[in-house]
Image 1 (tube, rainbow, N blue to C red):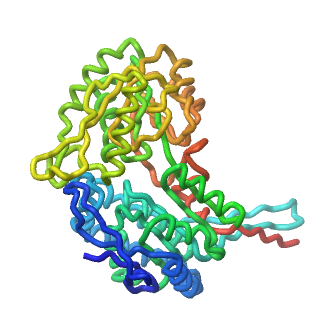
Image 2: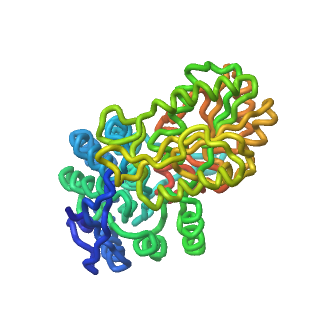
Image 3: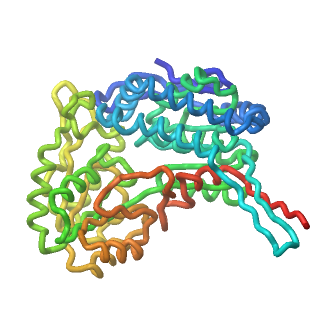
Length: 478
């Protein structure tokens, strides 16, 4: 199978006719070839988008909404095929792709399709002298670059508000997981999305991603990925005065207090630790447990973690699938070695797994580490795998200082029945999101993003929609 670029409504190989191998993480074998594109392919995509912009931006909001809703419906109708493709491409359990990734992609398209019908402009009266009103216009051609951990989920999270606002898009999915973006382009064709409105260019980041960021006429960049890559994008885009939305890394603290609902907490912390093999920027990788329940927590947590089945992503009872690639597996394992060098104790896991029939896949045991300090590298650097460390704490002041002691500030989780404490700590945590007695409970209307090195700007709701517009004030003297 060949995964082709989607430019001007047609599927093409790269102009160079070069190809990348696409590996199934569950088996370690190549199952498709990906168009390996370069700057000329990005330019072709830009030209198609520029040509389509007057038509798409000139449509009424109702017309755009109807087309985007058809795309959402197309995702739902093709859920089985898309979920299997996502699992094959990414290594995640098929059950997870069916229940989370693909339904959320459909919801993303539907949400922004309807949001544009309910957006409003502001007006300001100047004591009878004048009336000011604001107008929002689409930017033009914008760039959307999405990661490999939640491929279609985050691809649609970016392009949906861009398209809804009236922009045309040059998009780059991760070269590690391009399959569902390729299938999505066919759904867009069937839904009647005008040619050139969405263009998908496959290839490596230094070739395609950089060409999108450097393009002088692409007005905005929305990127989700690693902090180092985000830093490079900012260096290029900022002097060009492009709008930037950067959703970057995290090293998220989970704070467990001795007054929590223990059973509910244990279920939630296991999920926030190992969902999607820990390959979600929102996963809680630093678990702080109050000393009064530390021993009880360790026993109950390990009991549940040991029951998580690692193996074939297509099996119904698999809880932990394959990591996305062999290089990523090696990176995660290097942090487990580092933890031991830093004095950490491996309470569970730490070893590669070779499931029967899938011995060449990229599997790793869920790994639990103790006896590390917050300042150790394993607790400071993003690992992005099924690895967590557990750290005891004394009181609110102690845990707050440790939780904030990192370059990242994406999310935090609090498990406590004391709502006064919960509110006080939530206000003091230097993160963009705080979950209290839950995790990954998302309302699409709310702002999403991080503090410090976890990103710039906010996605979600009208924040995302407005990011892809230029606001103009018009003043009329009375």
